[in-house]
Image (cartoon, rainbow, N blue to C red):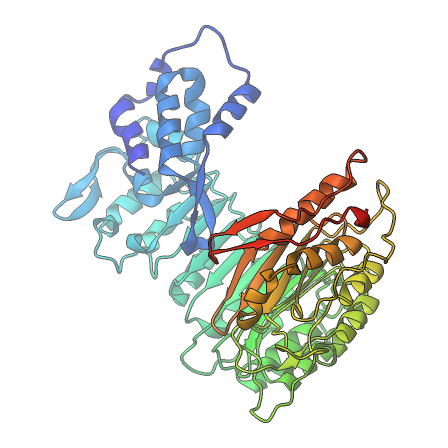
Length: 583
């Protein structure tokens, strides 16, 4: 942000300084300039705003140098530099804005002439950030801005940022007078993280409802008061509302959601929030059911599971395409939620993600059942193309996965392009309690469009290479198109993967059914985490296979003495056979 101030303080002391920039005798076509500046833009993530990308300091320096070097470069560089800003650089553009007795004041007279420089830069602002240090609860000097300064701006420029489209706030609270900078007739999205609920509600009452399309609120209080305020913004397309860690049981009246008839994406996080069940029992039969929702992300636990079934009922007439569940529930509660999925979604839902990471409550007397039994209520969702379930960080084995489960999954969901069964522990040393090599041709045959696969795997029982078995002839355009495969293996089984000729055996079976496989990753499972790393030994052989499939000159060779250094394991292995006969 100092770079912004540098432009204002060092080069722009006159009212219209950019007219004095050196002029080039050869004008640059705008499309060429766009390509030039695109090469200078390097962004970094602001994790406090869910990974929002902003310019890196090095990019700001480069763009600043361009802006000061030529008038041809000035305008396009300034547009990029000032597109995303914080509040203080804007305030410092005001005439005679300075610190007096520990408080920022604006002593200059605000009129069209004195605000010419402010107007030039402010019209480029598309994103405004208000971070925690800017909140009034902070001791930072940035918070000490007098009411009179904001009042002067509001009188002279009721909407000082006419092209503001996105506002992001992580301050717990903010000066009510500063809202003049946070609203705009062009505002499309607003995001709040950790802000006090009353401040957010006050802000929503000031925002023009017509242009606002996206709203994110992640706060620890506010409870049921959010939804009535949110429902006034009837053009919302996306709503992300997190009410986690509310101190006491709250009522959550979902009726205001009926007003959001254009809502296409909804994320509701209720973890650690206790709901009064009486507030969830009634839905309106007199109001038209919403019919626009396409994405629903729902995070619930045993305190608010009733909200899940209520929301599914509320949107039963919407053509939902993407459904994400994050649950901390008992197995019976999960199955009940699965069974409550509306029948319409059986033909519209294409993506289903279930996250049970540390969240499935399993009694101590529980006997592990098959995954197929657990997800049986979901098998009626015949249009699925992407299915993912994660169970990392759980004590015990809630269920197991076998070749039979893989067969069932592939039969009911033949259109799968992505199948992710991460975190399910294979049963060490137990034949028939984890998918084996036999599952590979089943998936290849039943799911011809599969491109990404993640599943637990029995690495202890791998058939040896059968030289007598005929290989399916390769022809251009034929063969399964699976590209990425992740195998989940137990910590105790990890070292087995690279013993003796095992990599060659795996590569043989994989290439037989997935001739275009590009990468195999081993996911080492333990209770606390999953460590993933490429299976270099197998990937090296598969690379030779891919080369062979694209060439008919020289037969593929699995080198007898091909040594691969695995520095992480401090070992060298040797594959044992030359497989010219394979081809």
